[in-house]
Image 1 (cartoon, rainbow, N blue to C red):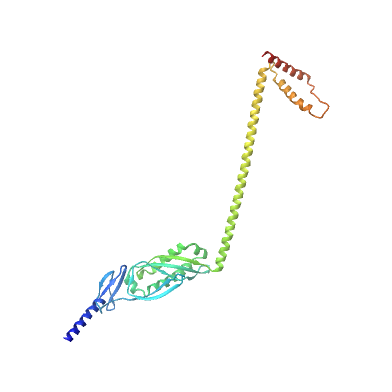
Image 2 (tube, one colour):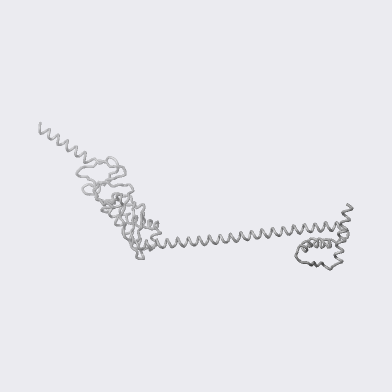
Length: 316
């Protein structure tokens, strides 16, 4: 009886052990590579999977992961797992020292985004996939920057990203990896280069300020000259209109005098008028002698004209 109970308990323990070790629960977006007798057998996808204990076992892989803390320091950690994540993953690297084509040394911070497309190849074609991606990204980055000068490197981040993504995607295709994108986070030139760039930037800003100031002065002078010209034109037009109106008024007055005089000698009337207007000014001076014109006939004619006008007024 005791032996039978012992055997029953032993069988029960074995069954429980087999049930536990033969059941694998795989999470969403994860897979497990299953080997049978040391050879690839199948890929266990998300959900409940049953394997044969002793014959089947998950393939464990070693990974070297890099993360950044709140201060931006790189934390390296090693782990061994049998789960392969199929989601898009990000691999952050520390600053890499690169040399441009014109022999300028600088540090570049890059981030790699990738996704495992074939878990089998990612398991058997490469060991320590994250570390391999890190090393490949470093060498590729140095190769790309080595073909560009300093100015081109600072101004062509998008071009560098595209080149890196294309080259890394081609190199990692045999690993079953798809590189979705590569981002250059920061480019840090040497201190001397940064100082020279800052001086150049300040000089460029001063030059632009002077150009803008000169353009402003030029436009102000042009506007001022245009304003003076328009003002002079307005004054000249006003004087011309005034003189035209005076001339028209004098012409009308002459026509009126001409129509009023019988003899039609309007010129004599006007000359006499001017003489009479000038007499007060002549008499107002300090001179003791006054010289009158000697054209007696013209003066008499003018007096006659006045007389005719007076007779016309009396008749009226």
